[in-house]
Each structure stands twice: as C-alpha cells, then as structure tokens.
Length: 252
Length: 252
Image 1: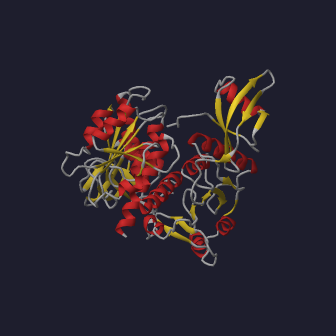
Image 2: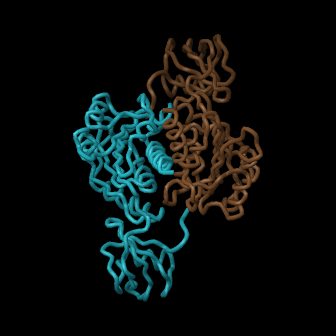
Image 3: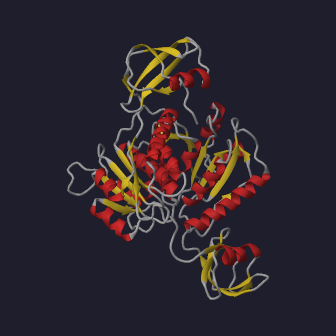
C-alpha cells in the first residue's frame, strides 16, 4: 500500500529558498517520477525529522532547481523511542528487519554480533541498512528514519539500550525467546506512555544460555510471542505490531 | 530460530504400528536429515492436528519403515480460530504472508481477488501455498496447518469468514486500512476469549472505496495499525503479533 498525496524525497539540511537539488534527488524527481516544472512534492530530512513542501522550479540539462517552503517538524514521527537490537544472521534477513522496524516505528536499530552470528558484517553493510531505512521511511510516510548503528557486540548493544535496572528513566527491555514463560503482552503492560522500549532478538538458533543471562542482567526480560517458534525475521514485525496495539488499547 | 527436540515430519492418516514411510517422508528423514535406524522423530498430520512419536525401524534401497507410537492431539495448536483474508497482489508476497500467518497462529487463509489484484492466481498456486503452510507449521512446531482456501472473490471471502453482524457467534472482523480512525488495539479489546477473529488486507494500493464499503457491510471494521502506511506483506505479522499480545495481556 502506498500513501496518497505528494511524492516524498529525502534531503539533508532543509531550508526555505530556491536550491539546486542534489543529483540523486534531481534524478529521482525528474527521471523516476517524471515531475514537471510547477509540480509540488515534499522534501524530508530523515535525520532531523523535518519536512517542507517544495515546487519544482526548473529542469535543466545539468539538474533541477526547487523552491523549498518553510520547514516544519515532520507530521508523522513515532511517539515513543524504540530500540531494536537484532543479532545478525545469515543472508539478507537484516534488510527485511530494517524495513519492518522502520515501518513499525523503531527509532534506533542496532545490529549485534552474537555467538551464533555467522560472521561480523562489513562496515559497508551499515551504510546499506541506513539507505534501506531512509527508503522505507519515504515509502511509509514517516518523517524521520531510525538511526542505524554500526554493528557492535551483543554486550555493547544491550548496554547501549539503557534497560539495566540501575538506569534512571531507562528503557523497558525485552528479549524474545520462544522458551520464555512470560508472554510479551504481559511485559508490555509495564510500559508507561512516554517510556522507551528496547527489544533484543537472536539470530537463527537463538541466543546461547550465556547470552540470555547477559540479557537478563542488563534488564532484557525473556518474553515469548505465542507458543510457536518464530523465524528470526518474523519477530520484528510481530513484536512491534504488538507494541503499537497494546499501547493503543491502553490509550483507548 | 528453530526449536529443539525431535525432527518433525508431516504425514497423513497417522495410526500406531509399523508402516512404510511414503517416498517424500522417507527421503526427508533419511537423505535430508540423515536419521539412522533406531532414531526417534515426530510425525504430525497437519490437516487433523494429530501427532505421534516414531522410531526409524529400517532403511532399505526402496524406502524406509517406521514404528509409529500412539497418536495424540498435537501439543501446539492455536487456541483461537483466526481467518486471514489476503487480497492477492504482485510477485511472491503471498508466500511470505502464508508463512507469517502460519507461524502466528492463523487457522484459515483465504486468497482473495480484489479490484486492484494484478491477476487471478492459477489453481496450482493454492497447492503451492498449502505446501508452504505445512512446511511453516513443521518449522515452527505447530501440530496443524492453516487451511488454505482456493482463491475466491473478495465478496465471497468476506462472506465465508462469517463476521457479518447478523451471524450468531460470528467472528470479529477487521479490515486493515492506514486511513482508518480506529486503532487495531481498540478493536481487539472487543474480542472475547473463545471468539474467532477475521482480518482482511488489500493488495498494493489497498481496497477501493467500494470494497471498503463491502468490508464494512460484512462486519469488517476498518482499523489502522499505527499511523504509517505498511507494505501489504508487513501487515500480517504485525497484526497477528498484535492479536497474540493483546489476548495475552488481557489473560494475564
């Protein structure tokens, strides 16, 4: 499903005035979407969560110029901070997780290296995941993109999320594990309106017992989503959908 | 993540005794998983939700024999009837929806032809989706597989789900639509413990206004999951994850 209304174009450093569009944005607007002079579109800065309407002013051989209206905070931004820690596994599953996490309101994604991760991802991978997050934000109408951290050890990722019991105003941490006793829905009941949520999910094969112990020590309580064993790439959409619905059910 | 314990093998008509395994099951047990004589595994009938432990008795040139223990109702079966109506769109998105729906407890999947569906799927497609559902059930440890209906018109699918206000003991119907006012979480609050849930989701581009009207008339209330526009293939995992968590939160 794609939203109605104006084409959305990611752009950095938005300010009012007439500007030459950067080559990538110009090509996207003129060649891919065939906008013409006078057409309106929206530019958004996925890092700052700022957006502005814009008018395509002129198309030349070397590029395109646009008139940018006054910037404003983006209309659609997640209302809650949500950190998604995903242990990196095989293949391109992380791509799918970044897309799902972006559509479903995560504000930070941390690729983590765990014992059963197949390999440490190259630094270029993070650049790729950042681009995927920006494109997913564009598609789903979101005015910011989640911050995608560089891959780090699971220990560093868990500490970074700030869910440890000693952290004041810290995040509610949850570690998804099919063998946990506590249902995710019960844990989510402890989430107050402005509180940050943080999730940790293992690769294929899950976390090792030592890693589960580390999760617990750092405030990530083991929870299960249903009784069945989900594929690691299914967990993100299911858990973030659950977070949204439980928050809405309690607000309503 | 893959569950621990014994290899699970789908098999029809399970009864106690020694049987020659059908060629597909024999190949799966002996060649793919290299079980040896005396090894234990589990057979399950995805249609009836029945399972039994089994022992590989002999491996011969022509196949393999197994001793089947007494059958019992499968340990893991969804506790609630859930119908997922998915308007068929482009590419292999339906494959992903069938996998997600199976892992997250749908008991019936209805591929629907809607105005913006690209093409009517061939009958072979249903066979393919049934095989995918059985394989997903095997992987996630589920003792039954959702019933995958043959593709039908959206009108027929909605009627089949039995969510119309006039249906006694009918399903709670929900039509996912990013422009709906009601959050999914609020609608799920109306779901009583044993009540069936039914979801309808459009293809890329969503349902037409006429189709949304038909959904409403047949008891499928328009609901949104968050404020962003989800891809049609993300909706299934997010909404079924929400259903599980809201049910668990209320039970807890």
